[in-house]
Amino acid sequence: MFPAQTGRVTTTAPPTVTFPDGRTAPALGQGTWYLGDDPRRRAAELEALRTGLDLGLTLVDTAEMYGDGAAEALVGEAIAGRRDEVFLVSKVLPGNASRRGTVDACHASLRRLGTDRLDLYLLHWRGGHPLSDTVEAMEALVEEGAIGAWGVSNFDVDDLDDLAVATGAGGSARASGPHTDQVLYNLARRGPEFDLLPRLRADGVPLMAYSPVDHGELLDHPVVASVAHDLGVTPAQLALAWVLRLAPDVCVAVKAGSAAHTRENAAALDVDIDDQAFVQLERAFPAPTAAVPLEVL
Image (cartoon, rainbow, N blue to C red; front, side, top):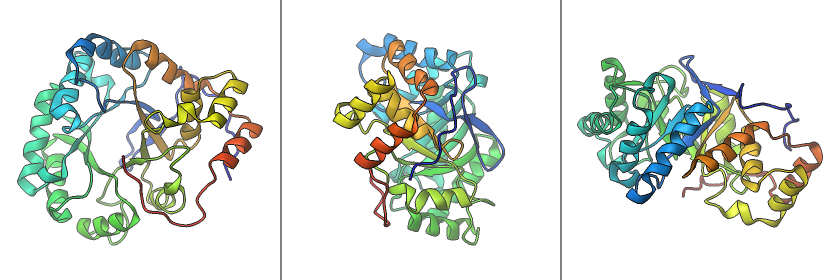
């Protein structure tokens, strides 16, 4: 079942997540997948990102894969002069995640972002390079100050087990391991609740959710639309608020292509989901009763 409602939150005091090293970031952040691809949308996308910073959505997630670096360049322009406000996350492609390649890819991302450091650097998904090589490179980047910490994306429980061996952490991700696992998690993709989220919670590692509206599929779902209507919110705000119910164990990065869309997303922080609404959503999107493979978009 869903946890009990924790009460109203506001955009002036957003919930936060705490990473294993003690640093904190807003539980609601900005994603950049598909941003930066079209020059005609650049001004609107820059305004969207800057509006998010103004509203306190200062966790910004990007990746070298997004637009072949175009999203990082867009983020760099958006945060220029405001870098110290931002908790900045980027990712290395698995094909680049060798010992040397990880370092080179990180430096290339830093150049596109116009900064000297990332707050978190993630392995985008597991690839062919040994995890031990990637971890060694990540630790070297921490030592040089290029990244504050590192994490992973699209890692299931068995992948985390292998990663624990690679870090020498003996089964715990806390001592020298990932600071987050960014995975697909939303109303329609609840698999992580069964085993992945409890594993991360036990290790003191927050889950970072992506695609909280399931690439738009949830926006047209009749139950989501009906519950949102009853609450006087948009379907997107309801879907975001549902994920945010698990803060501080879960944070979420959501994309917006306009300032109006960013403001809509930020207003999800003000959404109260009452018990009746939770029951309706639970019936339409039941929690997993057994382990299921991690889904990826």
